[in-house]
Length: 133
Image 1: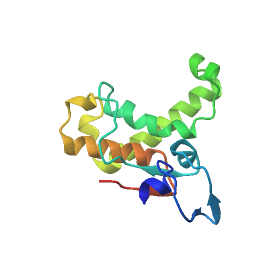
Image 2: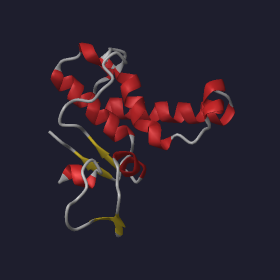
Image 3: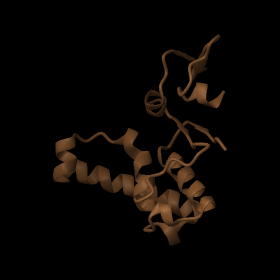
Image 4: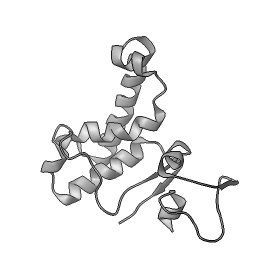
């Protein structure tokens, strides 16, 4: 059911209504843009990247700067990046995982990896959070 809401699977019958809107031909990317975040049953983190970098990927749907501006890290893009980092730091503080923020995720035990996955979902500031276990 949660995978249908998130757009991983499509319903055979009926429809999904979110915020009064019928959702047709949903996919996970579109669901994320509409404010739906989830954790995975099997951990889906980037193992070689740090905890901080993994959580930053949760902010992807919130990025507004162009690729060129982000590459140059100039003006509005720089301010936007700093705002995203502040939000991620708030999530890290909330989950009390400051001590592992620079650790590559692949070196962490399963329980901490699940915390990082939750942090990534929270960093997206979803209006609906689906927790799959």
